[in-house]
Length: 295
Image (cartoon, rainbow, N blue to C red; front, top):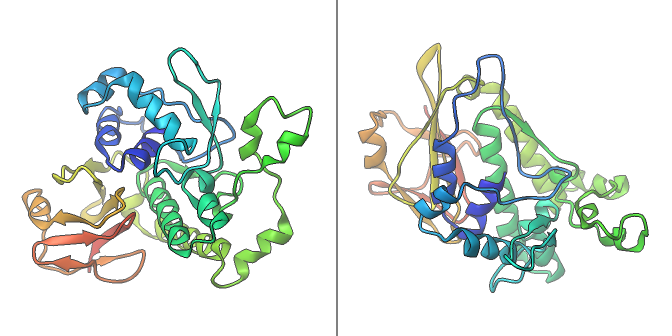
């Protein structure tokens, strides 16, 4: 969870990729839980050696992450709250709903349709990774509806001292009906996530084995990994996600060197369309993802 949020703030996958490479293989009779949010706060408990290895100073980097997700860093779209702040080190944990941390709260308050679209893309890109990485993806309370921070806890004497309640909302089921209204934020998120679930169920390559290979693309803004089905190794899905706010290129040559055959055309199984390709590069728009499979 924390590594994905680091990539959101930095707009690069350096620390995320290093952390993933350090993961041990899971046991055959066990699995991961993959999630973006839960009932608790987010702590940036990265290994300091990993932080140093990707070019950051641990203390200043954690302070940056805190400032970013609390909306105190210039240009940050996030609307989180600090939890258990250490005034000496500047370190803190972060509270906030997924949608508010991803920029949707700010965008909707400003009635900015471009920013709303960006926030939705960011939310879907993050979900595309927990659905495709392996393990069991966990959808937290309200994430599929884009629920924003709930500040009503501040009027409750029993909760006001614990701002983790900001991301523990009660569901307004009347408001949740907006998921059935075409074009609403709730509908766009709910429909897309339901489709992701359906695709995940249909792809043998997403079966839960140690069947994942991280690929080095030469572009730090992209996270890229290959999933394959153990019983049919040729059945593969290439997952790539762009964490940057500008379009990024995935060089086809990187994939060829890995031995991937491009004689057959690629299709993005999420959209059903061919990926945007310019000469020898597959192009991803800001916060776009692909689940690529050969036709």
